Image (cartoon, rainbow, N blue to C red):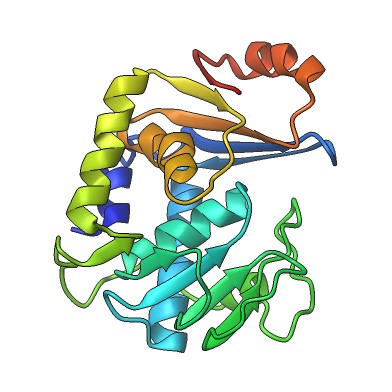
Amino acid sequence: MSVTEALLAPHLANPGAPLVTHYDDATGSRVELSVATLVNWAAKTANWLRDEHDVEPGDPVAVLMPAHWQTAGVLLGAWWCGAAVTARSEGAAVAVVAPGVEAPGAGVVATASLHPMGLGGGYPVDYLDDVRLFGDHFSPYGKVPGDTPALGTSTVDELVAEAAHRAGVLGVTSSSRVLSTVDWDFPDGLLTGFLAVLAGGGSLVHVSNPDPARLAARRASEHTTLDLVG
């Protein structure tokens, strides 16, 4: 079972529920993805990586993006097709990057616009424009072995286990709605600020470029129950 299948399994019974809500206080944007919508983004990404770029289990895919709803789709799509997610572009089969980020040594470099409405940016390889052409459902050719590299030195099984462990330490449960400002640095921030929330069955409200004066209003309007705020 892939990392993505393991982490999304607790959520699939309620596809209409919000799973990732992303605020950017620098722009004033708010985007909410339901379980079904995030699954669709992940499926499109997995299909794109496998069918367009021949990514196979264990192949490195660099994700050079900040914490963002688009990043969530890229990460889950990469793990769904068995890719080993990395922050190093050198030798990566594909690198998906934020605007202005370079990825020397990657086979293919695709730029994600980070536009709040998911619009492409007209880049030579545009992640958002490309993935829209691919299906909303992903059917793996086979199971991703548990010893497949997944993130850094962690295998699929190790990454899923660590995410579940951190969920327990943080107290994330299926009733948790987590307000977070944790950067998704590799691997600790990504594990704590994203994967642990999914593994525990909770939903995430992530605030980028947080304005401390607005956090109380975010807690109230989003009915959050747990803080991961530095």
